[in-house]
Image (cartoon, rainbow, N blue to C red; front, side):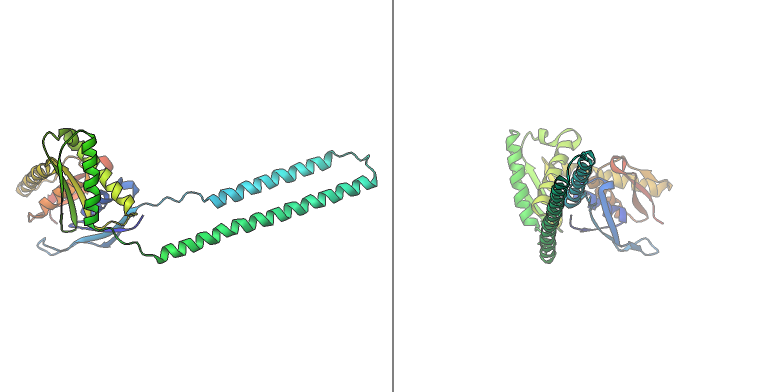
Length: 298
């Protein structure tokens, strides 16, 4: 998986954005902090936090190692069987039979040796090919999929999905500040929204997965899918609620923790509170229990 870069008012906000774009759980994310946020004594932001992130790689055992181990096991079994057959032979054979037996054993050993050499040569060839393939892969720079291409792919997917669900809608896209928003407008789209937006969030994750696969993990910007204006309405309500909680923190100085929410909703809360002087936000918890905490700025 290729590295992506995200920015935010805080490291937590940049991390939430990385989780949102990659569509993985927190324990599956690997990050490197490039720049930490710097503030003046009056709490005004001078620079944003910047980090690079990717899906934590998993290194399974190579096929060549398994094949080599199996070959060694078979050779040991064959060698043990040969020794057993030799020990069970009777001493009644005459000298000529012993010489023939010795000759046959030598021929078998030669065959085993030649077989082992051939296997070793065959095992080396794929390794060389693999190394050459890896070298060529490193030399070729993967071109990032632009947002216009992502919009075309996502629109087609959502139109087809809604049609299969028996829903009629017009799908349009907008691109602003390196962020793609794909919206489906129509009547009676509740089935595609789901209880508390669960279905529209699932459609968003499916769309991101399709883009990640088609771009081979090299897609520029970020993407959001909205059905029937649900996300726009939720964003407006969440911004109002977060700002009201921030004003309450300024009034009594007591920190307030919002309910656990997804990375996209946490980003909305972070951005809304960042517009208010004297308060700041952090993220606490992990996975499904991760939430935004509003507190007085240090």
